[in-house]
Length: 464
Image 1 (cartoon, rainbow, N blue to C red):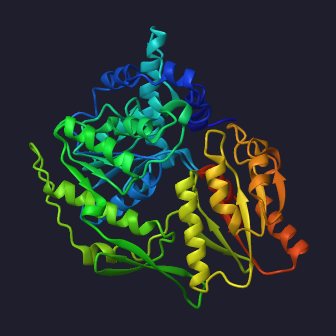
Image 2: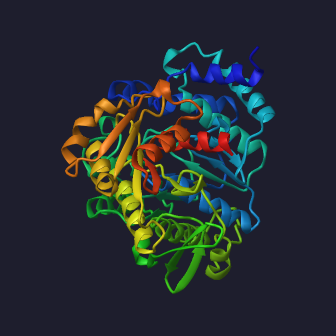
Image 3: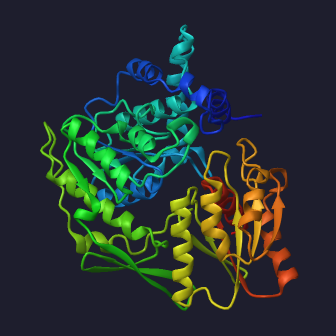
């Protein structure tokens, strides 16, 4: 017998889900702000008058939200986080100071929305899966009286369901080619869609990006009279390498301006993410708010200290099983994959990964840059297990196997694991298989999608 929670989840999943199926035709039909506007109006417009940080971009959104939550929470603010996708539990999308929305609150919120949806007669106003989750998050944050909302876009920006908010600041992370069938094939087009979250007279914070992206965002900001904070103008940052303690824990040494940080957050890209979180708080600190007093103080020494022992699942997170290092990263575009490769090379240079094979676990969704991702990762690998991480999304290995073969100049071996073969023990099976066939020490590097990361994390948690 299914629980009320499971029944309500089934109801939400019965609506159009652009995370599972992304086509231009479907997006044109479903990505209309009238849908979410109707839902929110029926809920009393909970998003109005709130202190919101609105975040768009191709990569780094999740890490930035995570860091901002830690920093703002440490300064005494009650934060509401709205992110996507989830890794293991759908309630990860809606959190308060990084704690998941409770099942009772989830059920009550969905019931309120369900009663509204059942009254809709105009099919053009029927919400999508993401509309329902957005309304659920905003209603929850309002009822719980969150001080600051950290709201991440789902797809694009201009027509994203979250783009009904009037934020304190708009934040744009690194932009790369993704969802090109919907957002456009050129960086200029994609930047224009992401830049659609910029509002009149509202500061916009932009991380380092390619020249054409910066030009597009600068143009939109100028049109909207929005002060622009561009990360390279304020901070210098880099990874200084990695160390391993006697218990096997790996730490990264980072430099932010003149400050040094030792942190459990791995991945060379975290230096940029941390600097970017500081710049976002600086923009908040400097903005003159109408009717709001945030009383924010940026203190690099104490703020860096708050980040020392952080870990973030699926963002170059590190695990040890049966003496094997397992690195799990959700890199799902060419730029993120290049950072992953740089991190592995840095781990080799720091003598963390040495005298062992690097075995890849790769699973990529249909609408991604196959060649860009594989070109960055394949040269590092001695063997690869291709997986199809989700039965609901198009992620067949056959979509990119020929590209892999063309890039496989060293003729490394590979195995394909289909979606229906990924039971709770599949990761353990991979380790046993490679150990039996190679007889060499090895580490595992998993990447290609957050869904790939989720599949591995599920195995690791069930084995723990």
